[in-house]
Length: 221
Ligand code: HEC
Ligand code: HEC
Ligand code: HEC
Ligand code: HEC
Ligand code: HEC
Image (cartoon, rainbow, N blue to C red; front, side):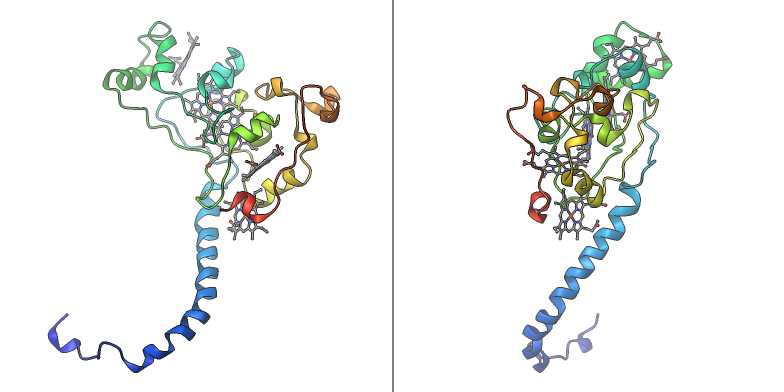
C-alpha cells in the first residue's frame, strides 16, 4: 500500500448507515455461520464408516471381545466425566512389559513408555464445538455403549457406526426407553433389552425415570 491510497476521510458519510447494515447483516451472518458449520462438520465427522488408521494396531476385538476386558478398565472416566478417557501408555505396559514384550507391533508403545510422550491415537467420534455431550449422564442412566458406538468388542479397528447427527440424538431423546439396559450391563455390548424382556420401570435399581432434553439449550449453550 502506498501513501496515495489513504484519501478517504476517517468517518465518511456512509458510516451513518452502519446501524441499518448491522440490522440487515446480522441475520445473514448468522445463517452463514450455520451453513459454514453444517458444511464443515457434517461430511467428515458425522460420516458413518469413518475408520481411520491408528498408529498402533490395537484390537478391541482381541482385548475387549476375546479377553473380555471391561471397557472401564481403559476408558476409566466414562461413568464420571463428560469425556471417556483414552488410556495412557502405562495401562498398556501393565501387561505388555511382560506379554509380547518384544513384538514389533508394540514397538511404538514401548517407545512412548520410555519417552513419556503419549501415543497419537486418531480421534474417531467427534461432535462440533457447539454441541455438548456428556458420557456420565448417559452411562449412569443405563444407555449401553453399543447404542452409540456399535459392537466395539467385535472391531479390530474402531469405526463410526452411528451418524451422531442432531436428528439421531433427538430420535433417542424422544423415546429413550427401548435403549435402556440395567446399569450393570452398560458395558456388556451383547445385552439386548428386548430379548431379555427388560422393563426399566420395574427395575428396583432405578430410583427415577429418565427425561432427556429436547430443547435447544439442552445441547447448545
Ligand atoms: C485395553 C484397553 C481398552 C479396552 C479394554 C477398551 N478400549 Fe476402547 N480404546 C482403547 C484405545 C487405546 C483406543 C484408541 C485407539 C483406537 O481407536 O483403537 C480406544 C478407542 C475407543 C473408541 C473410539 C474413540 C474415538 O476416538 O472416538 C471407542 C468408542 C471405544 N474405544 C469404546 C470401547 C468400548 C465400548 C469398550 C468395551 C467394550 C472398550 N473401548 C474397551 C483402549 C481400550
Ligand atoms: C490385561 C492385559 C493387557 C492390556 C492392559 C493390554 N493388552 Fe495388548 N495384548 C494382551 C494379550 C494377552 C495379547 C495377545 C498376546 C498374544 O497373542 O500372544 C495382546 C496383544 C496386543 C497386540 C498384538 C501384539 C502382536 O504382536 O500380535 C497389540 C498391538 C496390543 N496388544 C496393544 C495393546 C495396547 C496399545 C494396549 C493399551 C491401550 C494394550 N495392548 C493393553 C494383553 C493386554
Ligand atoms: C448416548 C451415546 C453414547 C453412549 C451411550 C456412549 N458414547 Fe462414547 N461417545 C459418544 C459421542 C457422541 C462421542 C463424541 C464426543 C465428542 O466429540 O464430544 C463419544 C466419544 C467416545 C470416546 C472418545 C473420547 C471422548 O470422550 O470423546 C470414547 C473412548 C468413548 N466414547 C467410549 C465409550 C464407552 C466405553 C461407552 C460405554 C461405557 C460409551 N462411549 C457410551 C456417544 C456415546
Ligand atoms: C440411545 C439413546 C440416546 C442417544 C443416542 C443420545 N442420548 Fe442424550 N440422553 C439419553 C438419556 C437416557 C439421557 C438421560 C436423561 C435423564 O437421566 O433424565 C440423556 C441425557 C442427555 C443430556 C442431559 C444431560 C444433563 O446433564 O442433564 C444431554 C445434554 C444429552 N443427553 C445430549 C445428547 C447428545 C448431544 C446426543 C447426540 C450426540 C445424545 N444425547 C444422544 C439418551 C440418549
Ligand atoms: C439432543 C441434543 C440436541 C438438541 C436438543 C438440539 N441439538 Fe442442535 N445439534 C446437536 C448436535 C449433536 C449437532 C451436530 C450435528 C452434526 O455434527 O451433524 C447439532 C447441530 C445443530 C446445528 C448446526 C447444523 C447441523 O445440522 O449440523 C444447528 C443450527 C442446531 N443444531 C440448532 C438447534 C436448535 C435450533 C435446536 C432446538 C430446536 C437444537 N439444535 C436442539 C444436538 C442437539
